[in-house]
Image (cartoon, rainbow, N blue to C red; front, side):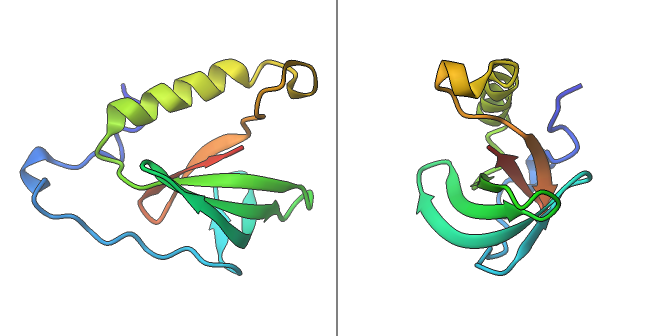
Length: 113
């Protein structure tokens, strides 16, 4: 089963593109294990927006990438797979980003790194 299969929409719905809810400073992004307070917008690229957040439980500052299009499930799964593979490496010694988790926020896939 695909890790994003619960988010995939029916192909007959392809003509309907729902508007993604705006994420702004002060908003809270919640996963099943953590909550993140959005501090500021960092940037935007082809695949998503990045916001600087503070993990409420630990006060740690993290980046959260909010993916734009969940219909590109193959690309999203490749990115998640890559992040899960490098998450076992020590980021202090291997110069790679630390992957915390992925979660759904109001229909948008979020990657906390």
